[in-house]
Every structure is written in C-alpha cells, then in structure tokens.
Image (cartoon, rainbow, N blue to C red; front, side):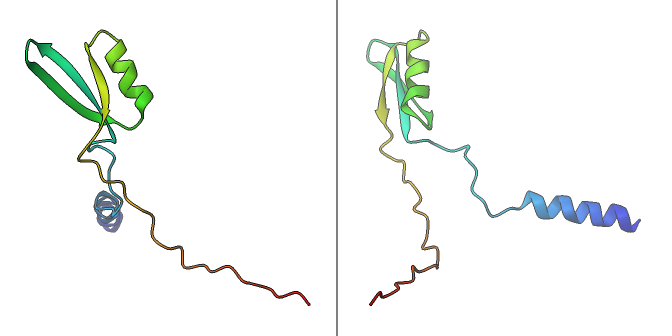
Amino acid sequence: MRIALAAALSVAALSFSANPSHAGEGPWCAIIGLGPGAAYEDCQYWSFERCRQNVLAGNRGFCNPNPRFVATQPGPSGKRKRHVQSY
C-alpha cells in the first residue's frame, strides 16, 4: 500500500513540473495558400529550415517570422567573474 501511494505521489509530482512545454507557437510561421484570397497561418516551427521544408513539400506558401512569438530570456546566473589584479 505504501509503495503504491509513493508511486502515485511521484507520478503526480513529475506531472506538475514548472518547465514550460514546447508545444506552443514557434518563431516561424508557414503561410499556406488555400485558394484565391484565402490563407492559413501555421506557426509551429522552431527553425526556418523546418518551415521551409513544409512549404517546399507541396504546400503553396512562404515562411514569415511569427509576430506573436516572444522569446524567453535566461535570467542572471548569479555567478560573478572574479577580477584579479596583477602587480
């Protein structure tokens, strides 16, 4: 019984991790033409090459930077470089 409870708590703790997922929008969008005056914006690409491969694979369109994408900046590391004076 204790082992099952510990396993359930471990699975629950790992399920709620604080790391963001990469399933959202990427920095590149494939603008795919659906017909005269209609287009579809597919913004799931994390590199220009991946976007370009989709467009070249038969989907008529082009790649554009995603105007809604905001890159996260890494915070300060907290480590400072030590400056050693030489005489």
